View 1 (cartoon, one colour):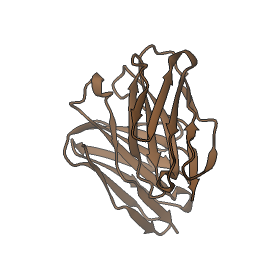
View 2 (view 1 turned 180 degrees about the horizontal axis):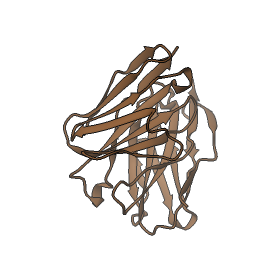
View 3 (view 1 turned 90 degrees about the vertical axis):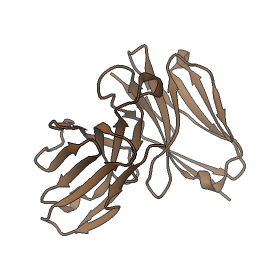
View 4 (view 1 turned 30 degrees about the vertical axis):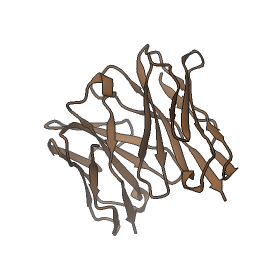
Length: 120
Length: 116
């Protein structure tokens, strides 16, 4: 099956620094990737939709200057949390859609294992 | 508006009991997809099932079964003879059929604890 990796799996950083999280589709090409944020004991919250070669589309309430998304290739999207603060501590999950997928497969999203960010 | 409701926040059962996780959805679309995902304590989402709105056949996969009732907009998930390894948070999700990005609409999840 399709595999999506995320790096790093865990990161601890100091307040005020920036952190970059990578999301890679390993055995397929993804024109669209999604970035989610999940707080403890809560559901996934979609932050933005990342399309290869174009600007990301952010959900309402998500600061685009705070959460920079770059989707420079068909297999890589990055999320950079700029000037991180303790309230940015969360579990960040990416997902990717195989561009070859058809309606029959439900245009299924494949999820990465997540990145746990702790800002001290 | 599209919405997924998982009314059960937490469920606790004893091993070998059967347990049903409820999912009710709202959508104006006539065609759509429904999903169930499992999220164990490690955090990684595990895909369980995808169902097309035009396919109302129930599905069984080992100890797992799903009951899709379009008339009541429900897509319930039953685990038979539960095991400790089934302890996780389970999410139901809805996706539109049409549209370029097809965002997933997530329920709040049901935390299942299976005790020995």
